[in-house]
Amino acid sequence: MSVATLVGRVLAELGVETVFGVVGSGNFHVTNALVAHGARFVAARHEGGAATMADAYARMSGRVGVVSVHQGPGLTNAMTGITEAAKSRTPLIVLAGEATEARSNFHIDQDAMARAVGAIPFRIRSATTAVEDAVEAFRTARAGATVLLNLPLNVQNEIAGRGEMWNEVWRLVVESARAAASVTLERPAPEADVVRLARLLSGAERPVFVAGRGARHARSELLALADRVGALLATSAVAKGLFRGSPWDLDISGGFASPLAAELISGADVLVGWGCALNMWTTRHGRLIGEHTRVVQVDVDPAAIGAHRPVELGVVGDTAWVARAAEAALDGPPAQGYRTPGLATRLAEGVRWRSVPYKEEAGEGRIDPRTLTIALDDLLPPARVVATDSGNFMGYPAMFLDVPDERGFCFTQAFQSIGLGLASAIGAAVALPDRLPVAALGDGGALMGISELETVVRLGLPMVIVVYDDEAYGAEVHHFGPSGHPLDTVTFPAVDLAAIARGYGCAAVTVRERADLGAVASWLAGPRDRPLLVHAKVGGERGSWWLEEAFRGH
Image (cartoon, rainbow, N blue to C red; front, side, top):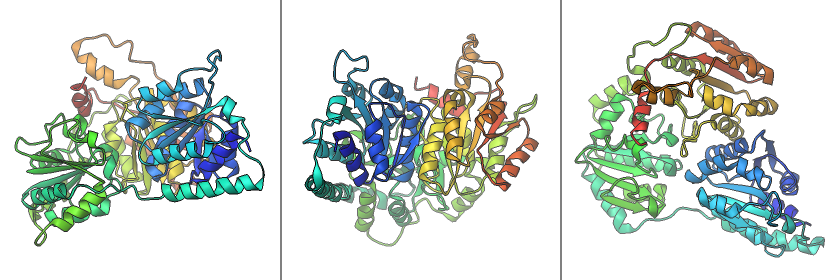
């Protein structure tokens, strides 16, 4: 058994079920070993797409994601997706061949690349340590990190063992490692901090919870605690849908918050961030935190506490554990808190963005993006997973497309790269095959990642791909245009994206007005035997208001 084969077998034994990637000579054997031992391999058309697919798969499935790439250029091609994953603390393993000979044209310092973007480098050191090295990389990723597992070419070909005796030895090693890897990752918090949190909440008249990525597993615990103290519930964008179904759900906090949600969040007397960075995006540069609001932050990472703003109380611990402990520390009956009958009526009538009146910006063959997105929200089935790219358009799907739960929204925006949206939707679709995948893209991001349309078609994904086309990098147009700067570098001639999509094997429709969406209804009613691209020619002279928030940070 070669080392490459052994590593693939170990990872499969540890529970790796799906691997994304582009296969070259340096990752050929480890990828084949994973497949031979039960893993599904999803071939992408570009390593950047493969890394983003694995990232999205991990976020939506709750499992460790794996991407397999060639040494050198295979890794460099994947780096933007790896950076996004590392910044998001996605549990991800990057399997990469490694040319250790300095004279090889494939040789680069792969460890330094990983560290530069926040990933953690590991290496298969030898045949005798291969199992140990692979297990440690897996355990580190599972704990919430993006890991580069280097596979040196000279080590891959070493013989790790022969015969049934060796097979039995490594099987026992892997079984013990699997038992260790299955141990809960919950981290208790200091009792004194939990008691302080409970006291703050028991005295609050207008408590608000804002849950982020680190609380997506804590829905039931946070709902129970919120019911005890009368808290309203909001999320950062990456946790959208976490509190769906609660009448006290404000949806997203920050630049995407509706006017009523923003009013209520800023009116809190106690605000608790649960696994949430409370950064400028989630707080509108701090304006959603009132002058006298007492701020608490709960996070498993001590370095996250107070990283973006001062907090009165920082509690280091797992969010689900802390919420349970805080509820247990409360005395007395449930409090009304923020939850008055009058407020319940206001929320039911006006907390959703689609309840906010707007002046239509359409005409000249273009549809208002709000009108488009509301109509799609009505047409698409509730069982959906929405993945968005970045750009001027990105708030429309975030604000106007509903999702059923925290696994319904895949938001890969920690690095703010455009071009990741389509690959994100593919990874989410593989993770959640029982839902309709929806990719929301701008024209710039769509063209950056368009090679993965072939992947969507090849996999037979019944995906709806919505392209909000303003024929520009709209963020830059609206940022620099008002100051009189020339915009030739960020505007482009019209492209027939529907025709391109048909060339890949998609169904496609160009939408210029609401009536054109009848084709979407027809596709939904049909066999859905191929993906549908909706090429929406969108209007709107004014820049997106969430971009006004964003550009204040640059």
